[in-house]
Every structure is written in structure tokens, then in C-alpha cells.
Amino acid sequence: MIRSRAPLRIDLAGGWTDVPAYAQRHGGAVVNVAITLYAHVMTSLGGDGIRLRALDLGTAVKAQKLDDLRADGELSLVKAAIRRLAPEGPLAVSTRCDAPPGSGLGGSGALGVALVAALDILRERRRMPAELAGAAFDIETQDAGIVGGSQDQYAAALGGIQFLAYGEPQVTSTRLSLPRAAAAELEQSLVLCYSGASRFSSDTHRRVWAAFDRGEADVRAALDGLKSCALAMRQALERGSLGQVGEILSENWKLQQRLDGGMKTPVMSELEKAALAAGAEGVKACGAGAGGCLVFITRPGREFDVSEALHEAGGTILRFSFDQEGVSAWETSER
Image (cartoon, rainbow, N blue to C red; front, top):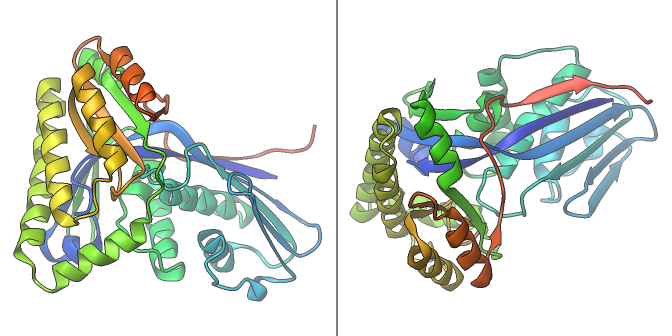
């Protein structure tokens, strides 16, 4: 039996500029942090055919052999990873995620990394973390046909607070080193709230990139601005300037909303209003936006007030700390 887990992430600045449509032409930049909410995978050889279970979704798929796994949208990422990497023969794969579906925390990217890590052990293969991220991104975008960027996979594979620079064709990752007190204060001051409204990031991505391909100037300007936010966020974090972090979060959120008219839902607006009144000084949507999670940075000591206000406004607080390890995978046996 092989188990693996990979952390989800909060994207602090620059999301959207990691998508190849922009990154390959103009270069992208992202700052994100891996958190202690995880995508989990358990695999084992033997049994009857191919058995797949998504425990958090209540979904199961069975097939007699690898070639019978159809790309029909059901557990598409798991199927794609198995078709590419699983050894021949009977196999069971179970998955679950600690965050709700559509949270905007990079769950599918983390799941892909955890799948690659677990299936590699079954094939007696080991890759470096960055190689796991690249393989998982290829499987998600090329094999499963899911539109998106690669920041999720790199956060899941590497852990920590990462600055990701996108060029053609490489991704360069730099683990950011913050002053010790600033790192601890940042972890305490961030409040993560699930809005309760799952979003369909692929639909949002398609609208944004269709507008980008049409040459819409406002979309291009917003993407350029998001990249600038990532560069500024790196500098602010390395200096330990948490007040500036809040300003950049909010600027990033304003630029996100310029990408698509449905980026902020009415529920998100109400949560944002409640948090700002209670002591938040910066806010942005996680991931593609249009629902899912919002992340807030609070004024010193106000995280409890903000959390309480968000709960009273109907939000769900997701507790976390920073993950420093990234993906892990190990072999276990029955006890």
C-alpha cells in the first residue's frame, strides 16, 4: 500500500499569470504559500480490476483494465494519471481532499502531485519535487484537458512560501525567507474563509483567455498588473512589511475583478464587507475567483474578530498553518 499527500496553497499575488497563454508570451510571476490542508492518495495493487474512489465526493469508478477508463469527465484527473503512470494489472486508488470542492485552493493541482508521487513508487521510480510538479501539470492540462496554470503543482510539490517566475519554457522557483517574527505574524494574521459557493474555474478561465486572445486591452493590462503585484509581494514579504502585504492583496483582488465580470459573487461581497468592518486590512479571492475561498490579512490581533464576523455572515473558516515540506509519499503495510 502506498500513501501520499500534497498541500493546498493560498495564492498571495500574481495568479492567472502562470497560465501558458500569458506566461509563454509575456512571462508570469506568482507568490503563494503551501498550507496544512492536503490532497490525499492511497493506492494498492491487486484485487479485481481497476477501482477508483473519491471519498470526499462520494464517487466511485470501476473498470476491468486501464484502457477501459474513459475520459468522460468523472474523476478525469485520477483516470488521466492512472492511464499514464499506473503499472498493468489490478489496482485500487482512493483520494480525498481536506478542502471543499471548488475552494480555489489548488486542490486538483495538489491531487495531481500526490497521484504522481504515489504511482511513481508503485513503478519504483523517484523524481525531484519540481519534476513531480511538471509531470502533474502535463497530466492535468494535456491528458485531462483542465485549463489552468502550474502554480498549484509547484506549491504542492515544494511547500513553503514560493516565488515562481515564468519564462519560456522554464519555471524558476525561489523559496522566500522572511524575518522570523514576520513569518509567524503572517501565519497568524491570515484568515481563510470558504464562501460556500463552488465555482467552476474552467468556465472562468475560458472566458478570460478568449478575451485575451481577442486582444482586449483591459484584460492584458490587468494581467500585467497582477504580475507586478507578485513582484511587489515578494519584496514586501522579504522585508517583513505586512502592512504592505495587505495593500497588495487588495490591489491584486481589484485586478482580478477586471478580468471577468463574474469574479466577485454577492456572497463574497457580503463576506468582504463584514471582514473589513471587523479589522481586516487586505483581501483577495483564492484561485480563479467567482466563489470559493477568500483570504484576508487582519490588523494585529484582530484575526479572532474577523473570523467571528465572517462566521456570523455565513462563511466557513478553514483553519491552517504553513506547510514547509511539500509532497510526501511512503509505503505502508497492514498492521
